[in-house]
Image (cartoon, protein in one colour):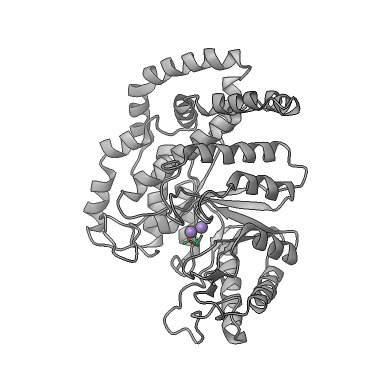
Length: 427
Ligand code: LRH
Ligand code: MN
Ligand code: MN
């Protein structure tokens, strides 16, 4: 273990007095609003977000890739990195694997390694957007939607294989994201491509274990720039409904055209009981995969406000949500970046829990638009960082994870052990 309990205890002792002073002030303010701090801390303490295995190395763009050094060279290394994040934050107790980037050679050993770090296996991701070496049929013109049966079958079989890996590891969800689409008008028959996709997904669904769910991710463009088969939440929802009750839509925040009202999409999907998972990130233009909350923190809060409302009023039977970060880029230390994302997500969640739902409902009933905005913004403008830090410390994490990570020079240790030029598998 790179981060010991003693490291955390010594660090927390140093920062405790400061955090408690902030907390006492907040407690006094919030209790006037009818908020019980201990209840809030309990909810935050249990909150977990999965880390994507592909975000632990330096991401690249199509123009270049700059290694940060000490990158994980194997699945074991990736688990160790999530172990560091989880030890520091106690909010990253799960990893999401991408096959074939993360094929476990010895499943039992991988499971044991994960257990040692207190990590479970979240949704498994299939990959039919790249051809693998020696592959008999290509995905160049689509995978589950391909007009050639042989390519479709290969992609279906791959997804079934991913489910099998997931079963061995104890996962219970399969996420399917397709790059399928067309870059030029006339290239594809829209109806046939959609129909093929529905049939292929249905076949995958028929191989899904009873306690598993299928998550269908959508994205408007990239790598195809004219049309994408599963382009939006409506298409994803339609396909999920066409599969069966355990198929749901997965929302990736970066997979929307600029200014889309994502919080409304969340509310709509939750009303239908079909929101199954989340890929958190942030973006200015497209699928930028930037750190959560770095560009539009208010949007993140508004999304969490809908999530909290949806979970508290879950009459449509949404499954427990698979929360995951899907961010990666090439200028920051990925471990630091992921901890910043976790912090932003926890902050948005805590702020959403502060929204006075009863007062909001009353203001909405009275058409008091001014007050509706006041209620939301009072929650959003509360500096909840001391609460998030206290919840983390209660769970055994560090009051200042980033500070301790730097103080212990974890990246320096990783470079010493793994070298400067290892390149992690992934994007
Ligand atoms: C596609 C995506 C999808 C993939 C991941 C690597 O843009 O968001 O979730 O699996 O990136
Ligand atoms: Mn995604
Ligand atoms: Mn994406």
